[in-house]
Structure formats: C-alpha cells, structure tokens
Length: 107
Image (cartoon, rainbow, N blue to C red; front, side, top):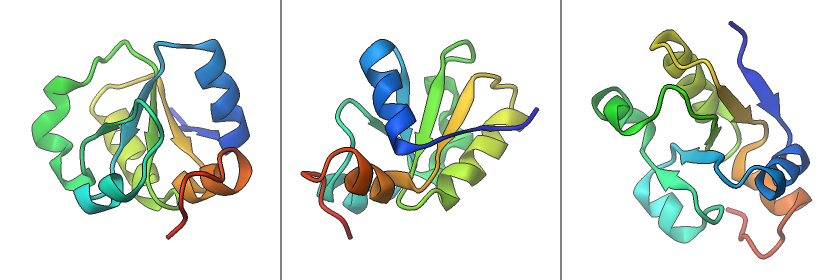
C-alpha cells in the first residue's frame, strides 16, 4: 500500500479539521527540543521497532522529521508492520516552518 504524502499546508488544514490526528515526530530528542509542531509526540526513528506498542493501528498517523527522509523511512516500516492509516509530511518540519508557521525555527 503506497504511503500518503502530505504537504505542510495540507497538514495544517487536517490539524484544524481533525483534532485526533496523531503527529509522530521521528527526529532525535535534541531536534525535537529545539523545535516541533504543537501536540506532536517524539519517538526517534531508531526506537520505533521497540515502541510500536505505543501506537494505535487504527489511528491516523502523520509522520514528521526534518526534511521528510526519515519520516518516509518510518512510514514504510509502519506500513510493513500493519499500520494502514499513515502519511508522510513532505519536506518535514522545514516545510512546515516555511509554508505554515514561521515562528517554528529552521535549522
């Protein structure tokens, strides 16, 4: 099953319309501490296999990283693990900062 790709502006609309959307940030803790999208949950990419039990198979999950590469890898892994409702934030938090919320610092 192909992974859905969301632009930053599409994600912004979805967040406004779907309050239960789960935002999974797969960056490293120091990156998350520097900046993140409000209400996102940090599970670094290398911890996902051990922490799958923290995720709901039925919930819509949007995966976020810096530029969209690690989140794309996480989406493929989650898809293989049986998650069907996953999407990748194309361009990552950098695109979010540029297109949706310039108060989110770029790095």
